[in-house]
Image 1 (cartoon, rainbow, N blue to C red):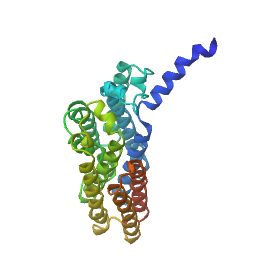
Image 2 (spheres, rainbow, N blue to C red; image 1 turned 45 degrees about the vertical axis):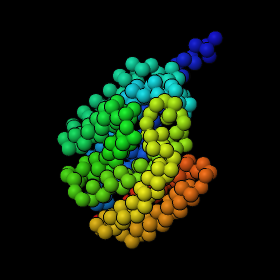
Image 3 (tube, helix red, strand yellow; image 1 turned 120 degrees about the horizontal axis):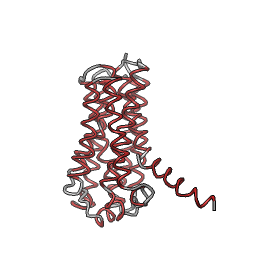
Image 4 (spheres, rainbow, N blue to C red; image 1 turned 90 degrees about the vertical axis):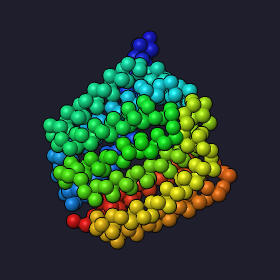
Length: 293
């Protein structure tokens, strides 16, 4: 009987642990750290870095919780997302809303007090774009929603850079562009895998609105765009020849996998999706290792 009594508490705790999408939080913190390192010219500025990354993590977790609240009806329809905290019933919709609002508010307070107004405004803008523009208004209306949502997803390195540099410049814009271009094939490959579920939930993502062939063409286009974008850090002397060699080699592998996927009838969407995760981490790692101080 005692075990049965404690099960709801454990279910609730697990629900709150997965509600903020910890994998996404980790990716955001990693990209924010890249911006901090490059903005500080190889110096991490421990105090600023700590509060910036904490603020980014809290804001991302809060935005994810609010996204769970907004998408609870969609998530319930889709098998892939039906196990999330709100549709599974482990966390109530009201609790997710309050939890997300508190985390975002706390993040902005921390960033304003401990970092800067610029970083606070940028973080607030990222949350607004993702939660309000993307999740609340555009996701259910147009396949262009992913482009708007992608702006929010590309802002963490911009925020990290601004935290230690004190302003935004061309280097910050390049970090932003890298993720803007990276995000679209990353998401579309996942969307292709689950296009039938998105169609069932009436979400007009690109594979649902335009079809598989068009989506594959767009993925290929954005993978090709990564070549000139990944060259920019070298051209603008953010990183050296080692970074360039790593970035171009990984881009060639990414292109080869994409070409195989585009011209094949086999389902290789998740191969592209998983490789894109490793691709971004390795590119940023090479950039940090080879940063020109």
